[in-house]
Image (tube, helix red, strand yellow):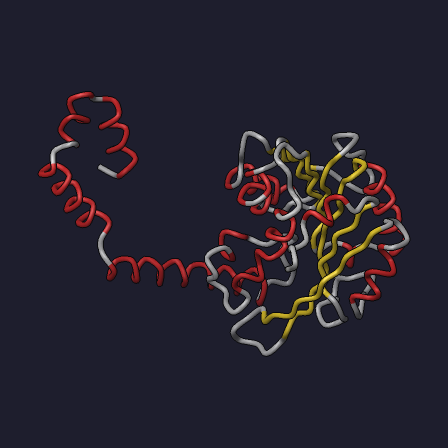
Length: 275
């Protein structure tokens, strides 16, 4: 009997709940749990097996495949099975979460497998519209990261209207470089027009030419990105981070993160207080 079955069994039977209050029964259950699920040795073995499985998937998807995936499998990344990127893979989720208020309506453009929507944004947002043009990404999102307050759409964000008129937060991560300058300008105007008065546009993009085999535009510095964003938003904040993306390479990724708004209200609230 696994833990879920055990909980259902105990919850559905009053006499079982009574028995579970007995110290002898609790001790027996603890021993049973240990036998079924194992101690440190079984934990290490399980992690090694998962590690091998995800590393194999990483090699197949990103190193050997002639066509790289359109979105990341965050089930692989969230457990840091592909070091040394580690926490950097979830950094953008943390930056967006800092801006969220309870009940916000968020738009995620290029949501991929929905990892950030479900694990970060859904905890505060009242509703999330998550869009992606890749059917495989939307299928994965619905299977792995569904939540009552998330709606996943197979959607062309450039050529189709957004699902709602106004949003508190719009997220567009790791995508600008894949669009032409003209398409990007049109998208930024569209995003600005769908933000509420104090709404914020957040996102990230890699800097430099090193990863740009499929890019249509490049940004060498955070100043280049800020200059473009300032044409569409009154207030622009940018930050750069650097991190390794593979333990088999010395390559260091440079990534820019931004927060843009036509009001300083949320931007100021998200800042740390100095004393």
